[in-house]
Image (cartoon, rainbow, N blue to C red):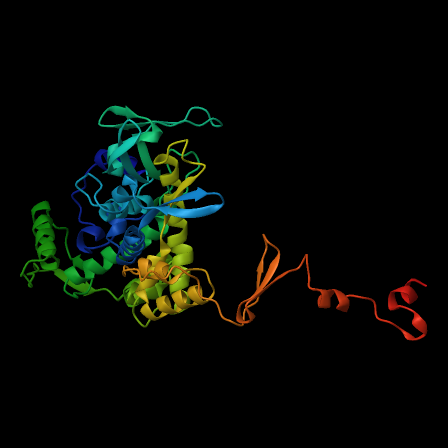
Length: 431
């Protein structure tokens, strides 16, 4: 039974004047509480996971690359790079836009959406669109799927949007983390509301009212109003009971006695929904509570899947068909390494000593001026082999040896060994 059916049923049911346990025991939560986006984001563990993942992913720069003759080079003078990292041409900055889209990715079945404002083939601006303002039209053909979107009564084609969907199967809508974990989030939300009701009562015990005779309607209503004021947020802390009416304190329930344990269990369940290491949320990435394995797992299981979805969406929507074979967008994860300065510089040292990067490439990544050192570091102990010229290069001897034209002394060493009696080793082997 859905929430609308429950509301309709509640309106149709006759109202009773009899006092009930729910009227007196304020704070009890209904079963199967519906959890939407606002309720889920009111749960601290859920909000922390969404905010942490979306905030960090939104802060990672997006770059444009081009393949040329088997090599990859960065394209820095493209206007699309500026739109994705700086000024979007909208009221939101690029970081704000990406964070909003990533939050919608986790919290809405319609995913994260951004409208691409084009002037011909040139992208002028990118505009974030709230998930509740966009309506994807239903796919008709289950094989050759097509989808269009309606915003403010106007129809749009898919190439006009950048869209990221969580767990989609039709490219139209997905299943958000909220939709996929409705029951678990409902338990966490009800636990939070139950704790709120305990705080609102000021720690007063629950209990039961008993009367020796049946109360008239006016007396019941007066008692109910007084009881609500007593357990509400007012300063009233005294209830005067009529003659023959007594209060019996109820014992603490198992939920009350294990409230803290239940909250911790619910939080662990929510961390599992996002595959989030708990130490990342509780202590932060830079704190001592998060280990290196925790940070690596956070990148591997939380950031990488989200970045892969966003990268595919950007390449699909922001590149021309003629550009797609050679160009591609990607997130620069080297920026994420700046959270740990020691590990960052150790990684650059390994890359430089291994010949993967040059000194000025490192300085450029660190926003430092170049020194004009356009060379790769190599040790004199290294022996290099040029696969194109088939030459062995020995730097510390200043020699280059062509293996297809070896020196004479090397050729002599290759001659068969002379055995006693004038036989060659090769000849004897043949015999």
